[in-house]
Amino acid sequence: MKKPVILIGIGEMGGVFARGLLRLGHPLHPVTRETPMDEVAAAVPDPEAVIVAVGEKDLAPVLEALPASWRERLVLLQNELLPADFAHLPGVTVISVWFEKKPGREFKEILPSPAFGPRARLLQEALGTLGIAVKPLADAEALLFELVLKNLYILTTNIAGLKVGGTVGALWREHRELARAVAEEVILLQESLTGRRFHRQALIDAMVAAFEGDPEHQCMGRSAPARLRRALEQGRRLGLELPTLDRIAAEARP
Image (cartoon, rainbow, N blue to C red):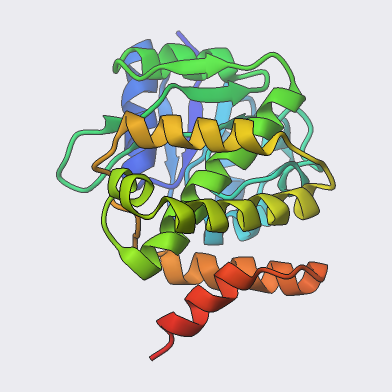
């Protein structure tokens, strides 16, 4: 019998991972907001993996409450992750998810999802049973690029979408100057947050490839205003000038 997997967060995304793991034959132990994690850890101290499938805003409190026996088995899949968010967690596996799952709909894949860490192969096998491609990465440097790319895609489309709405295909086709201006400021923010420099055109080219993977993807979700506020708060803290983001925020105010 295969070792069990802990699944923290039973939402749409968690359900996709659950299906794949069950198809591989792994027993699942779900953890909801009401579930005492220490009790589950006492019953399942040696799981194959602990997949944290909660939203971004819930990640920090979940990690703080995590039982010690689970800390070296983590899989993280949240948006807006950077290495500083999990540097204190030994043996963590991170996947940059490039498929979406909406209520009442089947998942939709945009690109293969890169993953790095000791459980990347498990994710590749589990999601592969559903026809979702996972691309294991060679090293942490490759993961950093992929995380920054995902942040670039999400922040550029969400923030530009606050001004023009529409789809990512239309954004690049009809509002390319705005999209590039937002993207340049997002990359500057990511460089400041990570203390690294990136090949900017390579990031923008990869972002456009993601646009082409699903050109009808809507730019702006419910989280867009919060993402813009967070980006501006980070920029102020780091002493950055982000004029395009400032202008969009000013125009979005009632």
